[in-house]
Amino acid sequence: MNEILEKLAYCIERGKIDKNSNYPKDLAGHDGASELTRTALELSIPANDILKNALMIGMNRIGEKFGQGRAFIPELLLSAKAMNAAMSHLKIYFDNGEATYRGTFIVGTVAGDLHDIGKNIVKMVLEGDGWKVIDLGVDVKTEQFINALNQNPDGFIGMSALLTTTMINMEKIVTDIKIIHPKVKIFVGGAPLSTDFSRRIGADGYFPDPHEFTKYLQGIL
Image 1 (cartoon, rainbow, N blue to C red):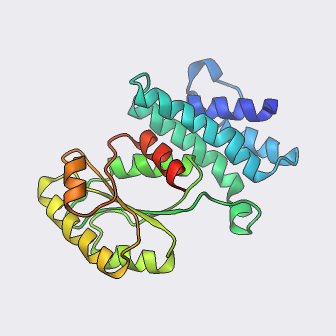
Image 2: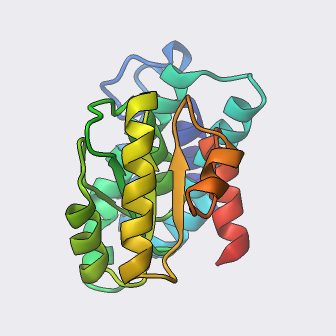
Image 3: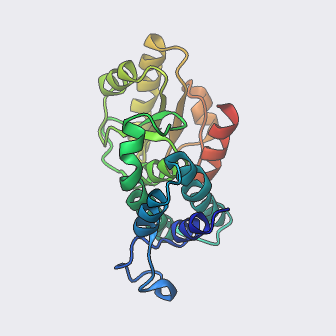
């Protein structure tokens, strides 16, 4: 791998956002994801190469650690922030078509539920894996999911719920969406959910680990 891309992947893995960030301590004063991405672009490295050969590799590494219990949510969030800092330099290349996303993913916490930590983690991990993520926020109703899907007909949907009472809303939303868009893939997540619940409501999968979820998506694309 190009040396600059390896350094960038390492910064994503360690959560080194930019030169001014003091975390991690052993990288204090060093260039972070922001500066290294800018340097890579100045060296004429294509945006797609930066995404696939640096950013996604770094996020995969921290994701593997998280899945193995060797990293925790704060570290995952810092890596995601470093990823976002890098992506801010690449956005123009995606907007003008010079670089491409894996696909589009629509996420939201279902109606009646205002919890967003789990949803935000999944969003960051998906973005780190090269997806364009449309975040509908919390307390999302059926119409909002359907409107977003109408505008992005090839998109996938991810729903989150943390309350047992809002799991009922999730079941209705999945049913209503499938009536209009029967082929759309809908995935669900949240502490009280399970694979059995996902099957029962007609969703296409339940994943408690966001990194395992991205690997699954890579396999079905």
